[in-house]
Length: 444
Ligand SMILES: Nc1nc2c(ncn2[C@@H]2O[C@H](COP(=O)(O)OP(=O)(O)OP(=O)(O)O)[C@@H](O)[C@H]2O)c(=O)[nH]1
Ligand SMILES: [Mg+2]
Image (cartoon, rainbow, N blue to C red; front, side):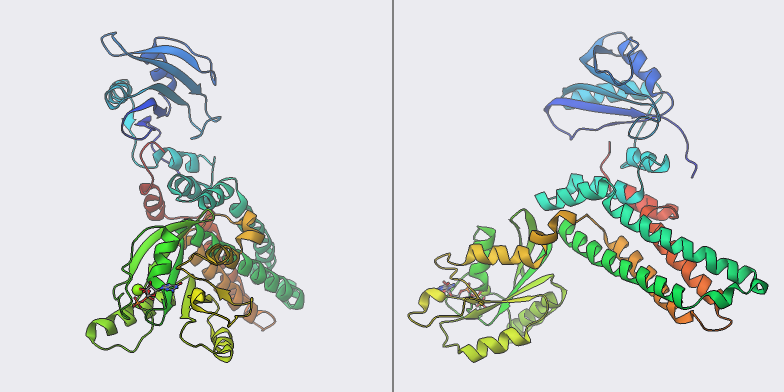
């Protein structure tokens, strides 16, 4: 893909005051700008202490100049860094001088976009940079780093390689029907496609998990009135977010707050739960609660054990729960002798008993304890693309072994490849690129 090879410059450090501030310059005249601004020749990749001068020869600042010669730089072009003192005025003066000397102010994400266009990183890695910068928890940061190092891209590429091998055969059969290749495409290829489908399913699972991690895992609290939903919300967030009273039906609106549990960001939603609504307001509250339960990654269904709940009822609850649901038995401090089997998740929000165990259970539910080291960051568009590829492979399987369907089979495989290629950016529209990089910060 061609782009105008001009020289861009931006302040790469956050606005405000700090010990050090960095101006980054990338493009054909970057090295010349470095020379003119410092009145010095510097060696590539060596941090050199220099003075930075303005157009009248006055010293603007003193700091380090580092020059990276393309293609051995982040963008793949000649790139220099001016590391000065981190004050907004100093940084502005340095940036202005760079612009005077032939650079242009960079737009958001332009450095990363150039790295992508120069094949230094693929699209997944470019997105991982933005996700790493924006990550709100340890696990999200580790996941972004894995994507940045190529974990996700490698899995996509290995699936793509197998798909391309199959396409070569099918395209040949479609192009040269007289060679009788079509007749050879049957059981073996079907097995290979099924294997691909399996790989896509695993990728999809990983991408969904990764997406939940980078965006935060949504955790919805539901249950009967007074079960202790709002109390649990406040305990998990360690803050008095939701109103707690002994009056049933206190919470009506959905109350949202983020909490970091064992390094993972949870977006916790306290709701009105399930109840027989007495009026319009409560009915709306219950409707909203149900909507959030449907969308949640994990649902905690709170049950008040002080309300004479029988063992059979608990077993019934466990049997009928949703896949993403954990039944939490609250207020165990009010139980005297009655003991609850240890397999049930018991807490007393009042005393704090069982909360640590519940947190561990939440993490386990996400598979972080066992498979957490393989989680990579992923985005909605990756999930959609894998789902699309999956549909085309499924269609393709249906065409195998059916006479005169080779063209349709070839087309499905082509579309599957197109979908996967869009993830790493081999084939991506300019519109999508614009959308992705515009969400970066300036200077990255
Ligand atoms: N003894 C005891 N009381 C609790 C416990 N957890 C909550 N409560 C009390 O139960 C009552 C209801 O708590 P909430 O947190 O408001 O319950 P809720 O599920 O949000 O109720 P609604 O918003 O009305 O649906 C309050 O008086 C709490 O103090 C617990 O573990 N033990
Ligand atoms: Mg409440």
